[in-house]
Image (cartoon, rainbow, N blue to C red):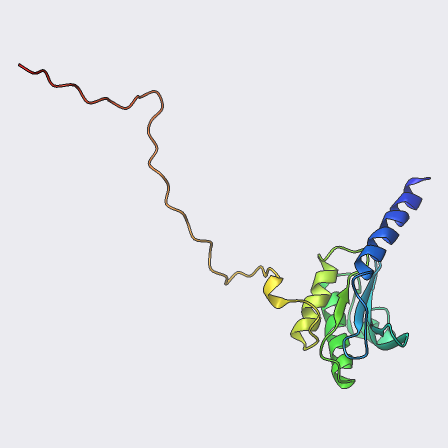
Length: 162
């Protein structure tokens, strides 16, 4: 088996592992994400009825007219916001996030965070690490006193008894 086939096989195995724990319903659909090198797309799927409830993508003509490129974090945030707006219009407030075989990192993470901030709860906000310039620095632990190397602690001298 060549390298590309092995890679595809690993991706399928990861996707099946992730998807085995997630099932979309009408009340809480599955938010499925697809990422390519140039675009990102997401859709809300009701697995019980086999229906796509809402979708958003960076590959559409409206997106291309307003934005320059669809394969970066900024585009993923916009797609997440559009999907959350479409979900609100249909009365959906929560979704099960299906990352597929992708890591929760970069564009995938940006899409999930943007959708959550826009009102479609699909990831836990407390678990998301936010890098910001305004964040307080980590507390500094006081350093222990260091003794110079080579010196031994002095022993108390025994007093002579007379």
